[in-house]
Image (cartoon, rainbow, N blue to C red; front, side, top):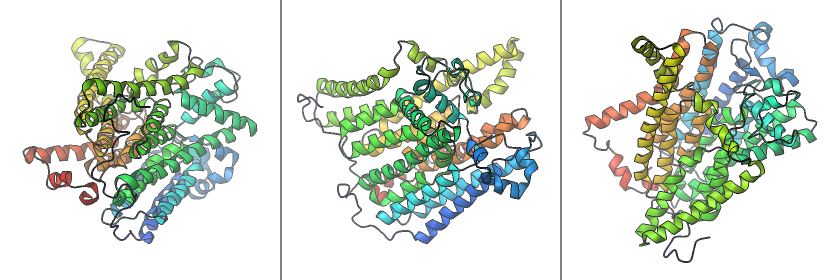
Amino acid sequence: MPSAREKNEPRGIPQAADAPGAAAGVSAATPAAPEARALLGIGALIGLFLVALAAVAPLGGISLSISPLARAWPWLLLPARALFGNALVDGSVPPQRGWPELALFSVLLVGASCAAALAPLRCLRQSGSDRRHLALALGGAAVLGGILLLLPALPSDDIFSYILYGRISAVHHANPLVAVPASFPNDPFLTLVFWRTVRSVYGPVWLLLSSGLSLLAQALGGGLVAYVLLFKLLGLSAHLLNTLLIWGILGILAPRRRLLGTLLYAWNPLCLLEFVASGHNDAVMLTFLLLAVYAFVREWEVAGLVALGLSISIKYVPLALLPLYLALVARRLSARGVDWSGIARALTWRLGLLVGVLAVTALPYWAGAQTLSSLLYSPPAQSLNNSLLEGISWPLRWLAQGLFGLSASGARTLVDTLLKVGALLVFLGLWLREFRRARDLDGLLIAWGWILVWYALVASGWFWPWYVTWAVAVVALVPWGTLPKAALLLAGGSLTLYAFLPLHSAPIYGYRGAVAFGPVLVYLLWLLRARWQAGWRPLPGARRAARLPVAQAE
């Protein structure tokens, strides 16, 4: 709790000044809601793309793992067999010959993303904030999530790693931060795991959840179907809870933008695919992050700090966002006349509370310094993959070999190391630049969103599409503009990586980053050019929007 010596310190992060009517949670003058029929039509269009995806995903030319659910319930493969025949479903088609299926798969993913973008666009001129709109957003997300829950293929095999790490703790009674899956050769699910010699890179809260799900799966018979269903249902539940949290946060911060932001996240195909079809734990990390934001806007700061600590203890991504929150606290206290010693005490107890949460959750798995060493030697820390950095590294390796006479491995090590260091320095500069925005809660959320976008574009040498879900969840809370557009372009583009991955031996494979990141890069470069032509002045309308309250600027 705050010290009594913290003179004039606010109870929590004050609400943004640009949210009139925030205390009531509703807009004073809400315009007519978008027609439910139009939004239902958009949801049905997204659903059609996802149903078609379910028919295409199990084809042999698309190197996705057939879901254990489809092996247990063969009827899930009936649409694919009816449309394409048994040969394409049961056979193994070389990727070079299976490019039509891969192209169709990519078109369906991008089509679903384009259809989903229509929902927030529909809400730009009109808005709704009653329970019917929440039911529409939640019901649509539940239906779309249900389609992907039964997707007969797995976009990612990470769910098998989650299962093994949970079993290491719950069944084998070992520490997944120290032991590797290969240490248990008799485990029936070991052959499904790709990273068999890698210790868990996830935080203790996720390991506790995985252990709990493993115990429940064992109680249900211990079959693979039970495990996969439980982890997928956790992802779907977290996604629906995140939708509720975004609705609640915007009900306080910006009621007129409530439906827009909620639909931007809830119906986003990338989030649905990664959280439900793949069961990625990023959904739960975002649940605690959004819970922290909700607590902050309600001025429940201690609860918010606990939730933020739990989010960090699932995946360590929110650590990059924490300093901006502390900067906002310091600025608020300084504006209220608190001296530097009072500010230091205020920041100290907040940091102490966060460290306490992390320490308590880590206790069941703590084994000294080796507990953290898995992060330093994990594949993401060692390699470049699917990122812009990897695309840049290929020509630079050839250049290094020709100029310095290095071997292929030596050139790769030199170039990759220099690129990682350079990218981190660029990201550090962009990260520091975002501190200027952290002057109120809206500015903090915008800064968080940009940091997550910059991380995916610049700093993430090891990149996978689900990294973009972090930005999508945060930008759902900010006014419509450059940042949400950039995040949606990044989300839609990154989905195309799934169509390129089977082509690892084809020349086009090296250009997958240009397709995945191309749309957002073109958009950002266009904005940069427009700013340059305007003499680096704000673009038309930007200055006026910056002065207006959120409810008016929207």
